[in-house]
Image (cartoon, rainbow, N blue to C red; front, side, top):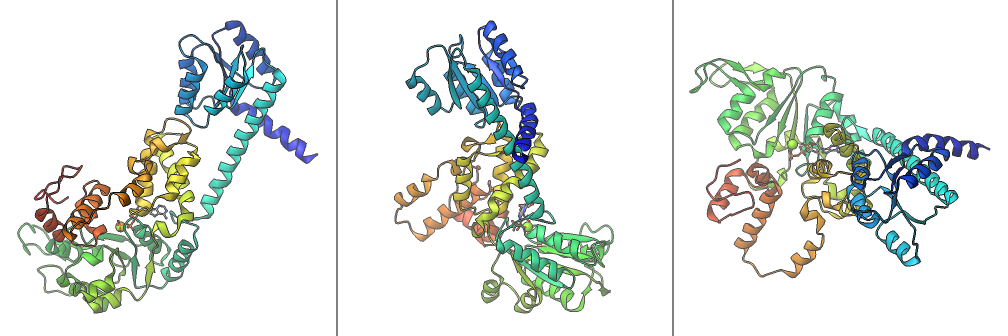
Length: 476
Ligand SMILES: Nc1ncnc2c1ncn2[C@@H]1O[C@H](COP(=O)(O)OP(=O)(O)OP(=O)(O)O)[C@@H](O)[C@H]1O
Ligand SMILES: [Mg+2]
């Protein structure tokens, strides 16, 4: 009983969203079919113009097309190709007066949902329509369930369901109440900044300010005045007295991003804040007390930096008393489908689109990629695919070129040449620069070297990248 009732309800809801379109150059056929389909409970759109039908698909107004195979201008098979190119999820049913098994097989092979001989068997057509309606309805419900799942696996805007990420959420929840200093460690694009914001939100000082400082974005003198403030006349251009971020966020949180990029001199100053919660504005002898929680983040291996003499050991121990390590995306592939859906929703809203998902083959490609740029890279892929995709689904052609050709990896192996170490470095730097679209700051971070080192290499080697980079160019 329940099953039948449910089936009827499903069909009724689904018939409203199916909007079948009939495409035929014969007006009598259009009238007859419209009337028949209307009797089946569906409201059909009839047209004799293939372009108009393609427009309907393009705007998501119809996902079920009944198309005649012989039409002047564009035949049914050419129409099928174009329709699938616009929306790989569309159901195209071809109809013909001269049916043969070979032509039916050919149509199905090219992606038709069904192939019906004329005169049309209305019972069969109704069955096909009902099946499609149920399928669309199921898809809709799956989407609703997925949305619920997404909600259940979102932690302050951070999406993840892998054990590794659940551990991160758990640790963040636990330490947020009590920390004075936390160190966030993870490769570029893994979500360190998001975790920092979540920590502040969950802390008892969430109502106070959170100041964010990217320590690698500026030279020492500027960084010092940004963090500690300065008094009028402290240096050329200091025309007024200004408090720094530690004072601005007094009572709240200061987030020191890319802390591994700071100089030893700056590290000494940071140590003083951590140890004594004391700061001095540049140019002032006055010592001020601040009560701030500190979250620091780095994509470097700070222990190795300590061993190399580039990072103060005492600061490292102070900073890392509580450490949260955020895993790379390649170590938690099970998060990819959820993240894809999260970004799809975000960019559908941003661009006013209604893309339902990715085709299976596009998903397979994303699951096979190694994601050196982690979640940021995945977000960029989905956001640009949302711009280029015209149909209901993102397909392979909407993905970046280097992802479309997974065989490139194989080719790489086959193209191996015995390069010198200098050459390997040059090629590698070039690739990373390309991946970062020429952003040298980010490239240096990924390469685990300072900007000045990268600049030195760029000067030494000749770089003629896709982004017009040449040795001696400005640092971006
Ligand atoms: N788990 C996640 N869920 C949703 N969005 C995420 C997640 N992880 C990262 N992102 C998104 O990816 C982008 C990069 O994240 P974020 O800036 O936090 O990385 P990061 O670790 O600080 O990188 P970097 O070291 O390069 O500064 C942001 O747009 C962020 O919103
Ligand atoms: Mg960051």
